[in-house]
Image (cartoon, rainbow, N blue to C red):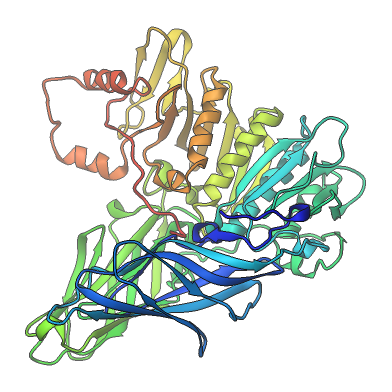
Length: 625
């Protein structure tokens, strides 16, 4: 990020990568004429002046032009020079800012080399995108403006010995900010306030903010001058503190047009759609594609259902361009390359079809693809009239609650923890920091906000609600059985993946110290446990590793992720699909007992032992990718 210096921690004429603005770093324009819509958040006092990208023309294209439109206005038109990875600056000056954001449409026009056909799968690519801004950011003077449209870091200061109310307000605030800023994924840090200080130690840096949470007799949210961008103080007695923290992420915050505001009762639990909903309510207002063989992707996001679901059925309603008699066609529905339904195209051009999604293909996010395949003479270079394929946003979606979750393990989270998660802390500032990191990571996987309630660890274990349990030193509660349970003298007890209730032990010499995140489903509730065998620093290292890349949380699979010193974390536990595959096919080598394979795996990674396969992978997308 290019950030010229400015006084008082405000941002002056910055150039910000698209990923820091919550947009994809790369844009792709398919076909002779391609279109991309780009929304750019704009901090107060700044204005976007250019989109800087590195361009790459498709093969056999001699020239290209890109036009930037806003509604009916043409903002700029730029010719794309030939060559590999050419830097181009596309003017955005004059774009209208609405609600602290600019939305523009980029249209590409390609001219193929004479005598060559354009490859429809090879797009014009913009990579390394960044937006240059002009102006100087205006520091907030009222509570409503405290959080900027672009936030790179939020630091939450609390006492080094936080009370339960302060811990609860901290986790709620961090989770709410993570939900509000979504794909921008700002760093959210919990820091101890130095002794006897009532304000952060210094002003914040550009595009960063500082919040102080404390118990006290004064109730409300107010700005605190720090010599630059002010900090924000959230204060109140124990029974009011969390509610004041909800103000920042609520719609009511727009009305906090003063330097101090006191919030009344605010509800933080999202409204969930139930067993019957529509694609529109699941975040898909409708999808369409125009091509010789068009294809659309329908996202089935379990976090938008707010629970783990199975038996998902989609009533596809829409249309496609009717085919002439000389052209044959079929509609094909697929998931992850596997066809789950197909039916012939007819002259009506109407789509009215129920499609069942197999439970074994379900993930946290499942992409249901629908394409129109055609056959026949489509002319040179596919010059047959392009076809339009449309699926309506009002297409019904049916589902049932899954018990146990489908799939199991990390892919069942956070939806199996929703809508309300109790957060149990073993005590102290460090466990609060760890719990905040976990909840922020889980929230970034979810399209809906997650409601939380912090309480002592024992109370959270005894509660009936889904839970995140943090006991970084060691796990001592015998009522909850972890997939990988450390014992005394290097002994580990491992639950056999895919075979509930069956376990084995193995003793390591020397004993292995590790930190872990482990998933448990017991008595109708999902739990995520952060613990170690006297190695809390390994829990910290694991959470730091997950926080370095937003895709790592999304890619977790299995039932436990375990970290030791000087090694990459690994994931243990077969997924549901792997369990079914194992049940249907013989083992690769029946000559070795299962415990021998477990010992081999343990020797290879020095972390996890198991009967099943130990897999480290990061393959699934986030809701905003």
